[in-house]
Image (cartoon, rainbow, N blue to C red; front, side, top):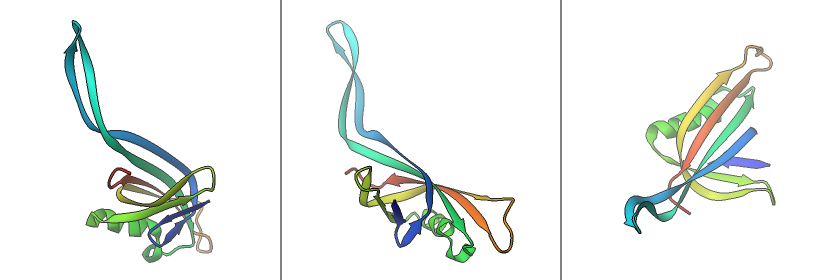
Amino acid sequence: MTFTIDSYSLNVTDFSESSEPVGSEWYAWEGDRITVKRFTYGILRRWTLSCVEVNVAWGSSAAKYLQDKMNAGEKVTFNVSEGDMHTVQSVQAYVSSVEVEYGRGSTASRFTRKFTVTLKEASPP
């Protein structure tokens, strides 16, 4: 499994993908009934990745990098290569959230940082 965001290779422990339609929805009257009509332009995907970093200084952390990108409102390039299971190739996305967790069991010789990042596709495929 290979997960990258820009030049950062991520150690991903859990991964999920969701999608939602982009378009218009309205009510219409048809045959003595109200009905919902929909026109879809495409879908936008959202990914949530749970990641782990071990012995990585904060200045070199992918979590810090993603926080900085989110703060600047800049896009990142997201890639997933899991062979036949799932592939995402060079998708432009915005960082929607970053949650960082520090383990209690961390020591000076083994410091563990867990973080969860949520990405939202910048434009429909």
